Length: 85
Image (cartoon, rainbow, N blue to C red):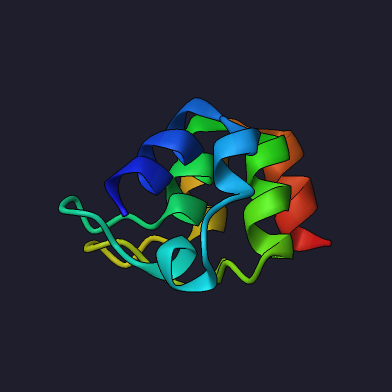
């Protein structure tokens, strides 16, 4: 699981293609899923890939923030646009 969150943070789409649906939706020690990390870091290609493979954009972190909250707070408007559509 750890590698999946790190890959999402870094936008490593080739690594994320190997992840299972369970790994994509599992929270790490910080309470973040790979989808949340991709949104937080503004990694649009990784975010698209994760959601396309079953990642849940409605899961929240330990503070109740969704992927949409995180990417909008960080100014990643391409990710915001993707999530809204």
